[in-house]
Structure formats: structure tokens, C-alpha cells
Length: 167
Image (cartoon, rainbow, N blue to C red; front, side, top):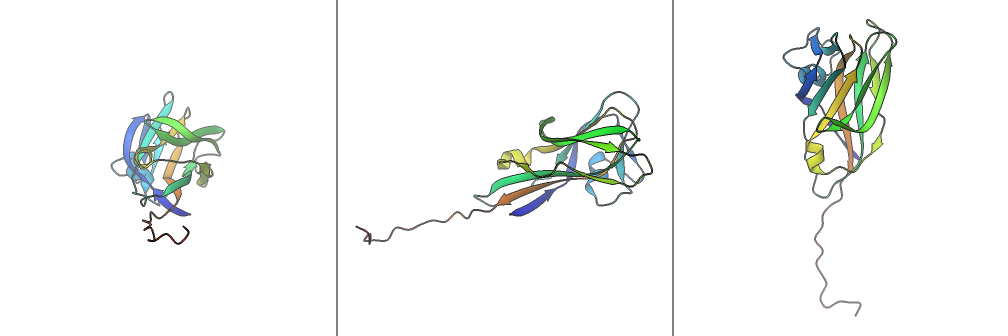
């Protein structure tokens, strides 16, 4: 199987999430890099939800997706939970995962939905999003990525042999 990694390239909606420590310009920029020094931070208020749009990748003709996985780096208030999942049109479709966070200043925790069986069309891959939700303030995400695993099935033209040797 081949894996392509999709990273945030758009902030499709944002309710009560801010930028922290080195984050420049946008939530998707803060979560798309490999650094823990730039991240998004949930603010005080009610339910905090952010939907991050992902970059796209054209799969080879005939390729079939087999699985997806959401990976995040998270930390936050002790005794609190944050959920993350794969989404289309802002609605969770696969892999809702709740992560328990152990406290600000704690080491970043690598969270994952694990491999999720999925057969996605190219149109769905182009529209994938990551949905992050919490009811707690000071939940922090530094990295978000989605792995799309696929099998390339070559499209081959077959020419008939004439005369047919089996008739």
C-alpha cells in the first residue's frame, strides 16, 4: 500500500480557538507544520469547534483507497477531553477519538484514530476535513495530519489475439 499525507491548508470554520506561541496567520498554518512551537489553543467559552480543510492529492488512475488515519499532537488542561475525527462538510464521518489530556506544560501527546477502513472517491479525498471539538479551554493542537492509504491498480488495455488460440 502507498500512503499520502494530507495536511491542513484551510480553516473552514472556527469557534473559540486562538493561535498561540509562534502561530502565524491562521489555524491551519499553525497545525500544518512539524513544529510544536506553533499551535492552536481553545479559548474560554462554550463548545469549541474548529474544522480544518486539508490539501488534496490526486491518486493514480484506478487506485483504490483502503484506509485513513488522523494523527494529532495534543496537550491541555488536566482531566479534560478533546475529540478529533475525519469529516466531510463539517460533519464527522469516521474515527471519532477522545483523547484525555494530562495538563498544560506536559509533553505533547501523539493521538491517532488508528487505521480506519475506508473506500473514498477522489471527490471525497479532495473535500476531507479534520474536526476538533472540546468543552474545555486551553486544549492545544500543534500538528494535524491525515494519512490516506491506497493500492494502485494499473489500468491496462488488453488487445485480443487474432485468431483466438482457444477456439
